[in-house]
Amino acid sequence: MDLRNAQALNSSGTAAFFQPAKGRRSGETGFVYGQPHPSERTAARNARNLLRRRSIMGSCALALVVALLSCSKNGEALPEPVPDITEEIPAEALLAQPIQMALNPYGNAPLSALAQVTTQSPARVQWLIDDGQQIQHSPDSAAVKHRLPILGLRPDAENRVIFTITREDGDFGKDTLAVSTPELPAYLPDIQIIKKQPGQMEPGLTLCGFSYSKDGLMNSRPFIFDAEGTVRWLLEIDALSTFFYPVKRLRNGNWIFGHLSDIYEYDMLGREVNRWALDGYYQHHEIAEKADGNLILAVTDNSLETVNDQIVEISRSSGAIVKAWDLREVMDNDRFSILWNSRDWLHVNSIWYDETDRSLIISARHQGIFKVSYDNELQWILAPHKDWGNAGVGGTGFSTAGFLLTAVDEAGQPYPDSVQLGQGRAAGFDWPWGQHAAMQTPGGRILSFDNGFRRYFQNSNQSRHSRGVEYEVDESARTVRQTWEYGQALGPAFYSRNICDADYLPQSGNRLLASGNIHYEEKALCRIVEVSPAGEVVFEAELTFANLYGSGIDAWGHTDIVYRSERLPAYPGGR
Image 1: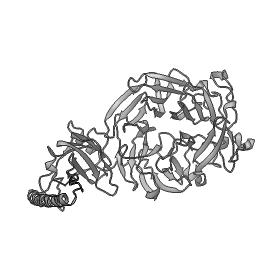
Image 2: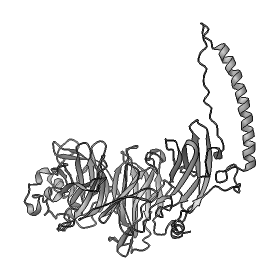
Image 3: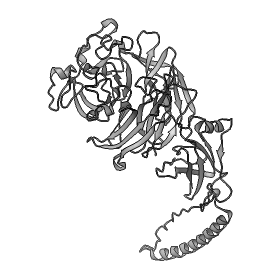
Image 4: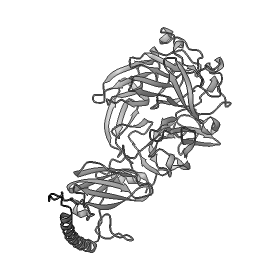
């Protein structure tokens, strides 16, 4: 069954529910869709009653012996221990009605399901998908009515989902449901796992902000795959048939992304939760969530002649704009050393909001990485020193040259002018070129994906390589030191001229790099690499694009891409 047929079955007005069967399932013992055979239930109940009577008698005898032997010297008996005994009981003794499960209840997430569990008394419900990856979730709270998102189902398979229902007294029962899922669509890439070292990897699954090309447009279909390369989640929103990005997980576990002038929040089941309209603006590239819930967005002001050079903050509750940054005021609008494009002179592609000082660290593909305060005051610029003039429209502002960071070596000594100006690299330093996804690590360093676009101001294949790179910035001395890199030695095999991602992974300290638009040896692909701080590759996946509807040439709307990639658990705070 393909996805379109499955979607039609589940969007006809009522969701298709999988309910427990009444008889034994062929080839299995015990549970049939979670229910034992009646004869087994009778035998099990009689055996448990007998064991319970024997247990009570034995406990009484033991209690008498303990009472006689454990009196204190003054004749006072010590407190009698209370046994903590729990047992497994039939699931139907805990359930008020059979568990119901709807596959793809909202028609947008074909590998997800919604389970509805009603118990006779408050209980906790844990569930897992019974396969090699053991994706599971264990909510802490007890309730009677449960609406449970079942995430991580395998495609084109009969998935066994095991539910464990635990009553407040500790007694528990198990129920098993089987859920059949459709095949994956043909437009998805072929995923090959090149290397994996599970003990050294960051736990979780890998999110890909994938889009396929068709008729000169991009069509976003984000998905998640496991360590074996199996897709375990897919989002298909036909109403948003073109490009939406970036697909990021919010603190509440939902997804957020932008499409044209609207910002959308969806849950993991593919249900639209919120939508905010940006009147007069066009969202692009980045959405950052603040601790107070507000959203910082990279936008274009439709009333201006320039694009991709504005940032706004919107209230999560009202959608109103509460803050704006006009980046024309703090950067040189007339610097075209990397690319001559007076309309898209800056090209913001990432924003990192630092809660500690309320600053913004901004990646601008056509200029460099820079930092501004919450009040839009320039702090520093991390970029080659060539051709920096005054800020402001028409150069009417302050000189930006004094905010340039000086590149220094490990001893704190500046590199030669040729390195400062971006005419070449030193043994331990290079500037970022056409970079994406700048972020701040917990140690305060700047991590970014250096695409190598027009490296050393050249437009040739001579220095064509991409890399993940990390810098240490001394704000008071206005210096920058390169502390880590990976990818230079791979040359064109890791080169993407645009998009891409670099992430710090908090549990392992590894870095996850995604080169999302590689064209090498007549193949179009994405390479995702997890690298340790020492530079060892502990995970590598190669995603070869199908380019089912596109020509595959390296041009926007004509080749498939992966905009960004993240490592995350299937469930926020869990597995």
